[in-house]
Length: 300
Image 1 (tube, rainbow, N blue to C red):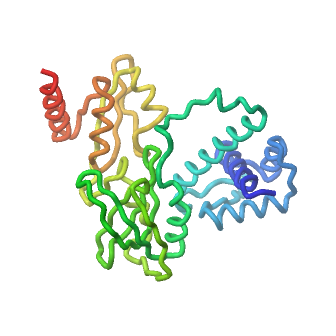
Image 2: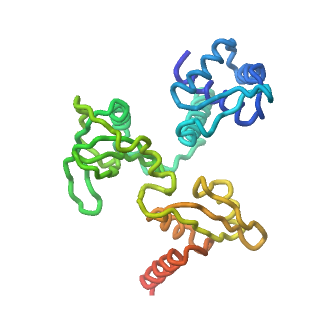
Image 3: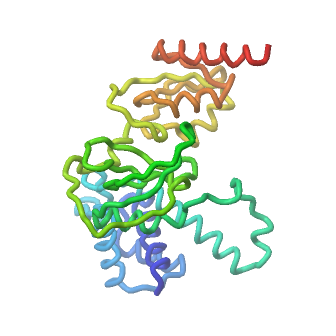
């Protein structure tokens, strides 16, 4: 069986446990059978072990409830894993549709400007991160319009708005930078390895961040008021995992997120135009107001 089929099976096991309210082993097996996977008990047990070994997701058995559950507290990068499963499931759905009909792609429209450059760099970059190998490359900066040579100790791949970035320490410094893979050329994975003990979990840099710009600034409560219609979109696609609904009625949908305000948050607020208003913190509301005034002047 292909690796893709195995990952799909992992996805179904997780789906059943997340939605099944402590499903028994038999219920998990029956669910897999219903989805077309006629596998035995030993295979399912091995799948659960692999989910823990490969992805750090702790599946445990509750003797009182007589069923399985996910131990969220002791699972590693669980949000990233769930996002990964969404990508896998979407890819499988599209693949099956294409196999059923060659005309399937005629009925699908992708939001893309012709494909992301540098996507071929993902595999060697991931290998370098896993094996802790230094990398060398040339990177083009849009702001300075200059190309610079870098030697980097990579520690994380970050995806945002369908673009990929590699995060790492530059040279022998403690300076952590981010590079868009679409602007990387002449990538070379070096034989030289490095120790990355300064940051055990680099993904935690983005726990309280929307987008790319992480900061050591304090985490703050940001309260936003949306129109009822826009609120429906915000509820189904939250701005951040910390999002909580404060008010939801015919006049407004008010939410609170616990984040480090950054450039991407400001851009997201501006993108939503008159459907959102910043209530707290006051300094962010003032910043948005000043940007909008400056924008308006360009049309006068």
